[in-house]
Length: 320
Ligand SMILES: [Zn+2]
Image 1: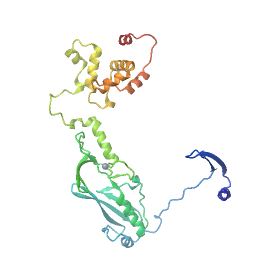
Image 2: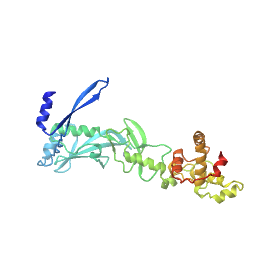
Image 3: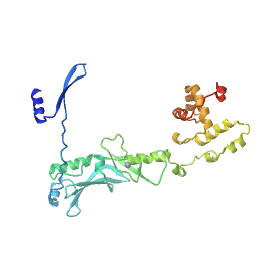
Image 4: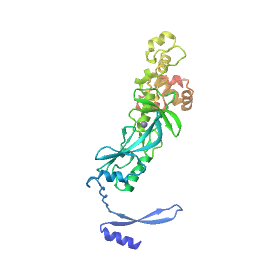
């Protein structure tokens, strides 16, 4: 240890040394020596690009014997790697294009893959090992399998339906037309971001409502927004104003995404009164789906935004 310290101080005369006490797992105190002020320059990136371009024949000779290849021109050669995926009966093939400037690119199902986005550098070393490494890397690239079709999914123009066959099993999948074809090595999902977002938009996007299948049974309801306060008053002449407001809010907000719901001041005030009286009861009414009501967190935000005036509010006394 002493030797190490001396070496460090010899190599970096400006560093300051300090000791830090830390507690280990068994509450043992250990002393760490810290050196402050050491700056290490990052190594310059090793670039093979400056070297003279490769001879295409040398490149072909280095390819694995079993890899079928196809020379495109004097500057690049293509190799095809099969995957265990079939899309609509056609195998999904990964194509590696080796270029003479010691770079390579990967194409999957006619889509150029952004290698950087999945953490692969696009240069290779022109040795048997170097090319073997590229093959191993590309073999390991994980493919996006799209989204599984289910009844909740609404169709847009921006996806394709695909019969995906994985290891002999067939699945019906939806794939975004902009699908990036690959997922990151450490991703928890087998579906790329683009395909995932496609379904999220499908679930909430208002512009796609016309494509939503209509319920087959029951009378056709008028679109909720077409019910007006006046119509409701006509239907239930004896209903007080705040009941009409509540009913109107039910017409407008039932079946809407929680973030798309809109509430009138009356409904907000009444909900807030119940909520402040008993959050538990309020939660129970919401959970029972008896009424569609604003969420407690939204009520609290609303409460904090509203200006408070001094004095008594007779409305509240009525509820107490
Ligand atoms: Zn995808």
